[in-house]
Amino acid sequence: MNDEAYSDARLNAILSAGFDLDRGGKLHLFEIDGEMSDEAFESQIEREAGVTARNARSIAFLMRKWLRIRFQECMNSEEAHTLTRQQFQSCFDSACESTCRNGLMNYATAAFLGKSRVDGELNSRQLYIAQMDWVAVPGQQQYKAAQDYIIATINRQAWAEDDSISDIDVERFEQELLAGYKGNSHIAQMAHDGGTPEEIGLALFDGCLAPSHCKGIRIGNRDPLDGTVEGSYHMLANDEEIGWHPDWRERVRKFKEEHGDTA
Image: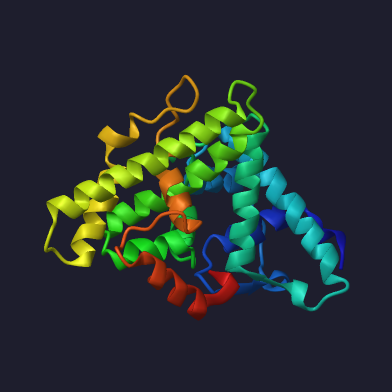
């Protein structure tokens, strides 16, 4: 392996090809030809991640650093010669989140997330995605749910480093979420008495995710950033704390039997 494999322009070209991989797709690191300038690659990241030029430079730097390590692994492992879509997406997500945590982005917002990242989340085997399928949540709402889930994950991790948010604030926030879920569950059951389980579940989903409900839940003495409350509900669904379908516990059991630890 020569130094050309490690040049920034070469790494940019390989990483750029990763954005075109389909789920389950893969590419061979030594079969990608050509080079790409830093400016072109950073512009692509701006489009994919919806970030500023400054943030794109940071993300590009972290992704190139990761790929250099990958090339070093190629010397000892034939498997490392191949880059899968999942590995590429993990690298991209990690670089974005590291940039956010390092203060270059002030927590995550919807504009921070590119379509490719949200699509990757929707194609995952996450339980909260399956929970929405069980009550036939429309595709546009599922897209927003995946977006909000990522936003909430990043923002809630950032709370741990925010001195103005205490553990008690987080605990009360969780209690408000669960209280809201129970209240909306009762309302959905009453309003759709005699309806199908899917109709009841969708009504519960809509009630918990309604802006009028979410805007009333606070973290400490301030309003959470847009998407954080909604995404926190999806995190609870993912952690088997709540469910949308009336028989969600049984469905979760079958789901885990089918997908195992990958779910």
